[in-house]
Length: 313
Image (cartoon, rainbow, N blue to C red; front, top):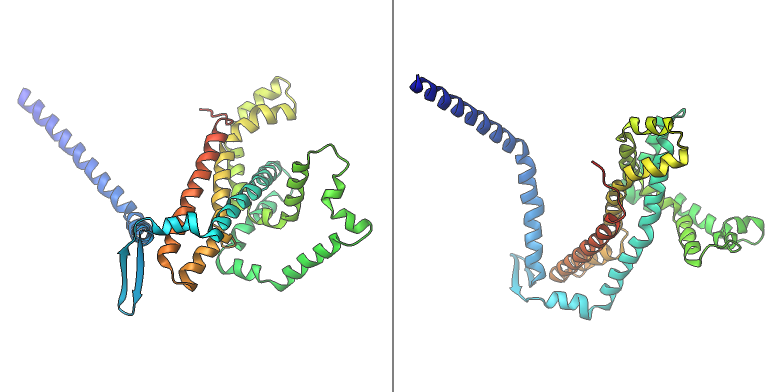
């Protein structure tokens, strides 16, 4: 009896181990395209760029040779090249100025299209179109669009025109008699001037906030209605705390998008040194310096915003 019992236990254990090993092999086979692509197209180029940044690259008709130079390229980035440091600072300032309006617009746009109204699906599609139109060749065509440039010049000329029409476009003059602090007036003026870029850059963030709205349990609002809560109270006591973790997600995404944009001056300088000046080693050091600064900005935002977020189970 004991022998048969032991044989049964061993058979069951072997069968379970066989099933587990098959599942493991299936999982590895499933993620293998990602692993191969990550190693070949992400991990290997990153390792090569580190080698470039710590050396001097000599390019010849037969290939290239890396001569060890230590931290000379990084010293040049941080201590010698004034223009690089200026572009680096401008990139951070640009992200700080661009990201808050994008997140605020995305949040309130998601709040509006989460309500029920006729044509809600069409409005959601329109707000998601920028995600498609700012990619690849379409973005290049858009940036070189003659009509868009003419419209921008037309709006600028109208804003500078004398009379009532010109004053309608002068946000600073409209807010001059309000008790707003000057920095808030400048913030609103900058946001209005960049309204096109804000709308174009808000597609993914709107989807993230909209998904957050859909994940809020309806019974919370039902309980609030029973208690007689107003719409304002439900927004600040239920909706905003439940959505607040996604604010950090959208902030980080927006910062990365802003600092990695093709129109970013730092990205343009890295590309210029890589392809025009063929200083691959210095460009790699610039790229890694930029990466470190980006990581520091994200860490600072995460540390500060996480204190204000209401995490719920």
